Amino acid sequence: MDYIGLNSESPYVLLLKAVFLIPISHYLLGFLFLLFVFLYNFVEFYFIQELFTGFRGKPVSLTFNSCCDLYEEVVSKCKILHGRFSSTPWLCSPHLQTVFLQFFGRAPVFNYQRQIFKTSDGGTIALDWLRNVDVKKSSIEGFDGVQGDDKTPIILVIPGLTSDSESAYIKHLAFKMAKSGWNVVVSNHRGLGGVSITSDCLYHAGWTEDVREVIDHLHSQYHQAPLFAVGTSIGANVLVKYLGEEGVNTAIVGAVAICSPWDLLIGDRFIKRRLVQRSYDRALGIGLKDYVELHRTILPRLTDWESIAKIRCIRDYDKHVACVLANFETVDTYYRKVSCSSYVGNVMVPLLCINALDDPVCSRETIPWDECRANKNIVLATTQHGGHLGHLEGMTAKSLWWVRAVDEFFSAFNSSSLIHRKKIQNATVDSPLKSSIDQAPYVNIREDGLVTAFSSEPSGEVGSQQNEQLVEDDKAGGSIRVDNSTVQKEPNATTQSDPVPGPYINAMIAPIKNCLNQLSRRNKISIWVLACVAITTTWPILGSALPLFFRKKLRSIFSASSVKR
Image (cartoon, rainbow, N blue to C red):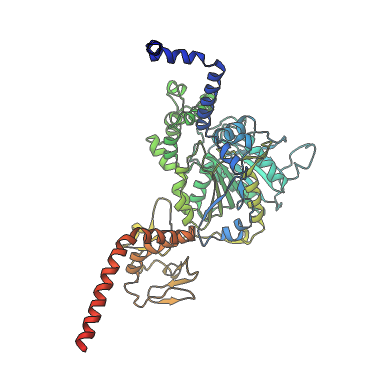
């Protein structure tokens, strides 16, 4: 009876009493634990993963064409690009890497020497110089410019969106390169760097006219100095698009693109997915709104200032400002036209591209992996972590990994034979918007997986240089020189008994062969693993079928022998 009396009370009441018996400090610890788990995932921390690996970091991944001279002569000698990137232990988050650089970048202290450059349409651009001799002097009395016969290499830096020469990452790069013996010039965007707009035109993500005029000016003034270029974020998009537009007709010897957005249409979708991404979108949108309102009196073509005052994201700015001034019908059309991913195939200048796969602003989904692999002039380096323009390393976070990588790359490039070599024409792509496949009735799939066009009728306007093309075999290391009438075999080349159906046989076999080659090139163990899996999964069927097969064979043999007897 006592047992029944004790348990007659409602279980919910007992549970409530038990809850009140738990100390408040335990609830506080539980709340802090849940908050830690939430923030750890929300801010995308990877401290625990790094702790288990001893903060060794993740290796840098390189993507390039197997016939890439840039890799063989330059990148293969860069220890940083073949090493690992390890984040600052207390900044093991792409968001912390990005935000810390913006507000606490710990930029080196120095003074630029400014040069005002006037564009052909009346615009004004501030060129901020930092010469190698400037970083060695305690004080500078005046800027006498770079001598016209100076042979010191010049690096042109193109900042990102709403950034200028005073941004922390730009100062890190400029100081590091000037200290290594280079002359650095930062080309500020129109209306930035403390210079007012003097024409009815603003820069945007695909505006290459200013870069083109600045490069032509630098090349004409300092024609004996090799000219290199570095683009960051939107500046990288502008730089790659410019290189694709110019092809071999540019004065740039070598270039580096850091954290390029590549495809702005995909990037626009990405930056609106999560709450943390939308915070970047809002911050950049408000910065662009302040930028255009600062020059309101000089932009008569902009009339809808009420909508401009309500800008809260990048897309709003592109809709009410960029599309109006650049005469684009829609924002999506603007994104498609100005994205540099369409111009990657036409880049004829040695180009190193660096991206972080956890970039919170520029998604990894935009990276043109296949286009970079197909172009022999491009090497793509990707890191697992780093954030947007971050890559802060060391316990004190005073160093940027990508700045050291750029310094090492340009130093190796400047001492290589590529600096004296003419730009390599990429025969597989004619232009970013017009393909040779549309100009020929037949399509040929090469052994390396690339699709090219060929015609059965020779063109009279095309010279003998276009009648011959060199097809390199990645696996054998040889080549086959194809002419309109003859096929000459070179060492280690693949021969064909009948030249007539060759293209059609290649078209059928090449995709399978290319897939196997890529699989074996990526990981030699993969083929054996697949073979073991295939044997293991099919063995129950084969095990039951083989005895029946051999039994019938033995019966036929014994029956034949008995008949002979």
